[in-house]
Length: 425
Image 1: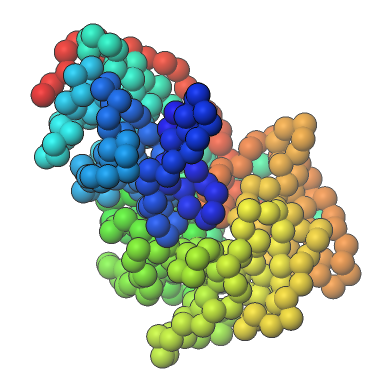
Image 2: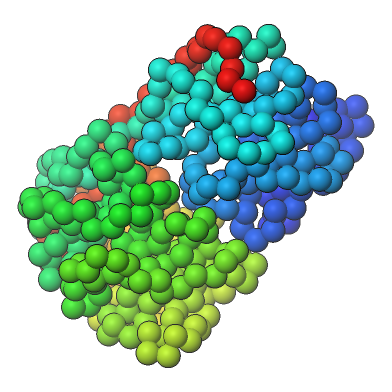
């Protein structure tokens, strides 16, 4: 039996004997990389698996069951979602995101270019080849994420309305400090890109043109002229900044083979905070933009640092726990805010003297809450019926505290499909 082992800070593959229970390490990916989707070859000698190096970025590998002869088969930066062996063990069928859609592809275990496997789907995952090689079953997953808007008045939320929508995924909304512009991520052009619109959702304009994998966590400069965000054109997450009147982003921080992500700007414009896996686990650093020197602010175990509106405090979240902490901007005098427990993770934002956050309700939907830092009082502002999107900060309140934007999963469905026909070689 082959499993992914998350213990000891690694996510490599281990084998467990079903007779004796003996465990043996097969792979050690290193850093924050994770080995998953493991599949044993028909002759029992080789394991195929996906090595995830960042959110929605992975490469296809094979390795002997002894842990030797690690071989990387794919080179392009792609989102991979499952693999299966052909009956003779000569090829692998896998699901890969290509030009905005998930399709089935075939590749030789000797390497080389993969080929498309035509199938009536645009969202394939988890393929499985029949023992005679004449059929492939796969899961067709579809999710539609849209950004919703709701007013806030006298500590109560109004009625939500769909605000920024398409047939794909829209998330990571962010208000400019002057409240005139909203930046968000959408795959409406075929791949995740950053878009801009005005406060009413009009005058949409595509800002980035990476044409590739996941990006997000958009934060504005204090003067509302530039943004920072994380993107993965080379595989691992890196931090970029971009003026909204420019054509190309500028790399701020890259630290291969580690993750550098979820940036935010200091209120005085001097620093960019980010979290990184460089150091053995997620920790918060900041870069001085005048010297390009980095400083560790919060040790391993913390992520997504955001300054208070007055720049006198720094808030950040404990990784793996639903806890928000506060400290001085340089990391001094940290303490936990026990009443601020966002669910999903990352869905919180400081505005004025309060922290607004989402909390998944046990009965379904999401509660919207605000914690007043001056009075230490927690208030429930209302409830929305949707579940919020996962994996990215998608919960933001306008600087004047009057409007909440959040990304919700409006539709999610999956079904098993069957493809008939021989496999290309």
